[in-house]
Image 1 (cartoon, one colour):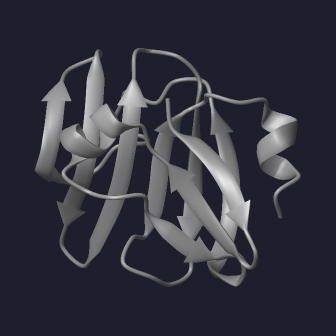
Image 2 (cartoon, rainbow, N blue to C red):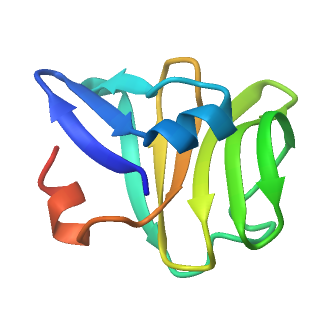
Length: 114
């Protein structure tokens, strides 16, 4: 599962080798200052969280969703496995508007990174 790590003044979404292969993307990173908000979500699979069309990436509904979701004027990076709890990090700037990923570490650990 993807994990959020802090490296200096940057936040990095650390992906496993297979997540990188499925997403066709390396570890996304952003400045700490670019974070607008962090939300912990009980249900990631749904229209209230997901938007756009996957391109590029890998998807098997309710099993795995890895890659970029694109829409008119935005891109979201997604690394979801299963139907568990997840995190949505909204960004002010950078290549992605949001990072959406399955929760692989405690909420307090993610909140403490800021």
